[in-house]
Image (cartoon, rainbow, N blue to C red; front, side, top):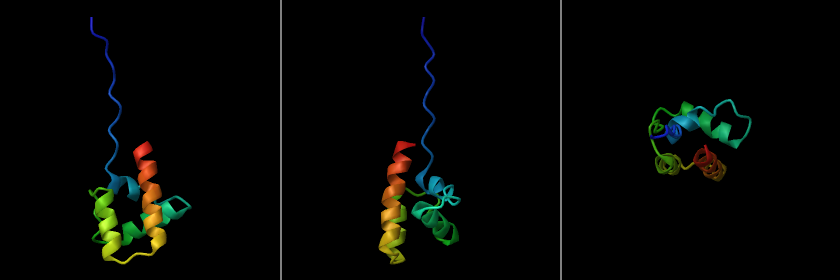
Length: 77
């Protein structure tokens, strides 16, 4: 007899996960708000896509640090 083992829920897409963080009161929240305002934000993008967008916009170094922190939280999700 096989036992049913439920699958862990799939991790959400990073781009969409980040947008869902807009209500946070920290640097990740600020990054999410900036992403929401950016019409060319890679909604379905990976961390690397968001990083490339920050580079293209010559974003403040704090936004890159926030992206690194966001990636760690997302990976732990």
